[in-house]
Length: 202
Image 1 (cartoon, one colour):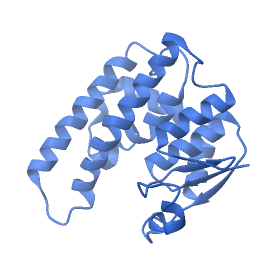
Image 2 (cartoon, one colour):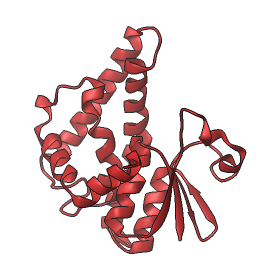
Image 3 (cartoon, rainbow, N blue to C red):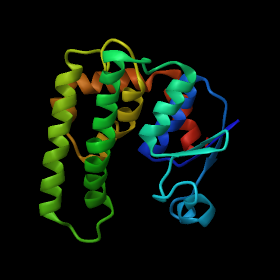
Image 4 (cartoon, rainbow, N blue to C red):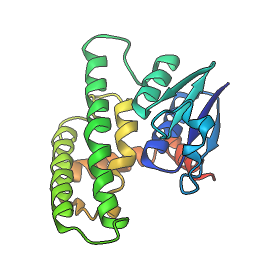
């Protein structure tokens, strides 16, 4: 059986949702990030960047959430086409999330909620970039049911927990009706509900 080390963060939620969508058996171990469990030597030996999620499958340790989603989708043969342009499209939207959405939204969240002193330059810089990214997704979802086209994929799973954090980011969603509709559809999926509950330890 596979083992997933995760926590209740957007990156951690991606993995638990994917496991539920793909109906893959996996032992889930929740790490207490506040207590620093991600820095334990035995964890770092498998995840050298000290980050969750981490998947161990048949002795192979796989770190980075995007790599984990690709591994799981290929293993199950679902949510990621095997080859060709369709696979490339899913991967493009997946990599946009891991390269831009996670880092930018994460920085905005930190400067809004964790920074001990208010930094207007940082809030403007990351706020503007986050709104720009939401605009990219709004344009895409205004003409496409899901990020990679007509079919739900790991690109949607990767992106949903992050774009769903708009309230904490202080975004006015009236400018993003297509994103709002997409968020609502995915939130109602039974696998999303189960995956979120697992990440929370429920």
